[in-house]
Length: 324
Image (tube, rainbow, N blue to C red; front, side, top):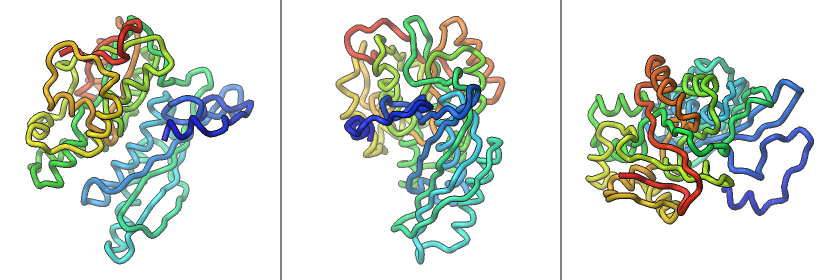
């Protein structure tokens, strides 16, 4: 979608702070000298069978854009595609309840929405968040010397494929779901307090794709240490069994030429770097001397997979350096 938006006429308004002229997690509009609103929207087909869980996952995923920009969710609207005649109406009730419970957990409120008949179940939210205009965290802004922190493990795309193929046991499924429904709120508040320079959330474009977004328009290279990247426990094993996603292959085609590999990267590692995530973690660039304290603070808040995974270097060669 981003290349398409670049071809459209630029939106010009005195209170528009972040719009379609840059690749960021949400749009931002100033409503007063000390208050701005962040707007974002996301929805997708069901990735789990339980409609209540799917509602939670989709809501956490949609609100993640607000957290990535350092804001707090305020309100949301439901967007639903419902396959009438294929699911009982009780499934719709559970779906909406799951989304509402997750939005309420974030301290926000659902104020309505829109439902249409579709061929398959789809759900998401249009979310409004709030932030001070001076405190907006952008995707761009990483500085040479920064450390790079990732707050959730990779592998939800691969786990989703494994689940569809009946390869997940009960414990693996629970871990997979718990990571997706976990809000990025603690990570967002901690990174703002630590003095974040740039952030994005890792979702459909995978770690490599979203890291590439952070380099866009900046004179930097992001170096990622593959061995430091947190993974869901069996993600590499599932990848080696061919339990991959079509989205991961598309991501590889899109970003592969932007990667410089220092060492020998296995096919499984390459697919993990490009695995599309649902409700993934925050990818944070902040001063190196503050990174380890941030990781420890996050661990104490229950964000146990958070890790320093690399650093920001002056621009040289390709924008993403993978060190193995």
